[in-house]
Length: 412
Image 1 (tube, helix red, strand yellow):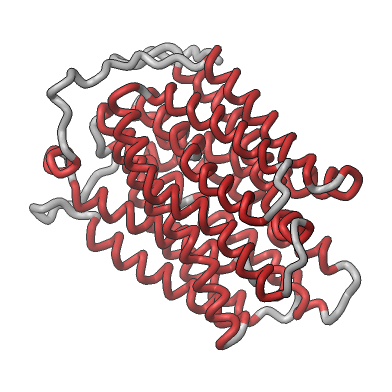
Image 2: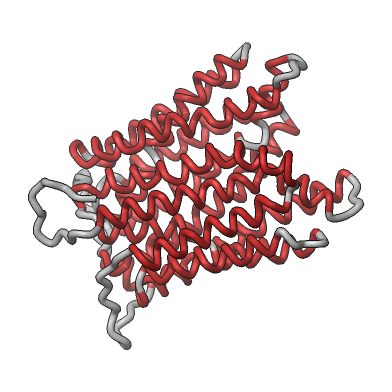
């Protein structure tokens, strides 16, 4: 991919090609993971004679194990990325997950799935490392647009995956999607190995700094910590809705025979909006300030979650979920952009690794929170609680958009 725009001092000539390759690679990653996730409980159910409670426990362990391991190992991989390069971490993640996920197709017991999912957590981090590489190679003036564009890759794949997986599982069984996902990740491994370029200068041995020393050297360490917590709350908020969205649709449709189709559409709507809006908000943030887009997105999230608790038909819900996708487009990409803009390039891997850990914690806490609130109160209460989480996040971020001297941060 080329550009006729003047070259910015310090800008490399290959970041656009990196963005194109990584967009396609994260797109395939999104298809692969979302192809598997909806059918994992059904697959586990085939591997044994379980009671309902046993099946729920095995599914819970299988889903959470990957994210729990990710939360632990992501900072470690981030440190290695700063030491050895981000391209190497992409190769490690793509090849490792290709093997581990393919092996899940040959499991004969639920515990084998759990063990392989734990290993999947060890080798995971492809999307996070893709963000890190783009953040460290794209010009700072265009990092918002670049990260917003990259974000649409995995979201596009995530939208298409359940459809592809549903057709394959229906006609060929639950094992084939695992093998296909492994193949897609192996293709990503090949693309990254051949086409991704990174001029990486390793930190000289003996000059590596501790995490504490790195945070002392950051432009605004309090802001970086605020972005970590923001990432966790965003993931918790989004994932608290996921366990109940199809059940909420069923409640609104009063026993219609098209619940599965409509629930799939409602679940996909935020992603469609995100694909449309994320690059535009990223580019706008580069012009007017990334922090302004993030604050606006949080305000909009607070407002848009509340009416979802009071809808009377599924089309009202779908419309509001579209608005949720717009608010999401103002959140995660902007957090990543701020992390990139306020972190020295040689520390990007470590910082994005910690951010991945907080994201994983949110991925674990969200479904647990949504399930607890919906079981003790109601489905509507989940949307109210999510709005409250967004309000807490807004207050948290607002207090940190100032430097130690009290001057407002200008996200250039």
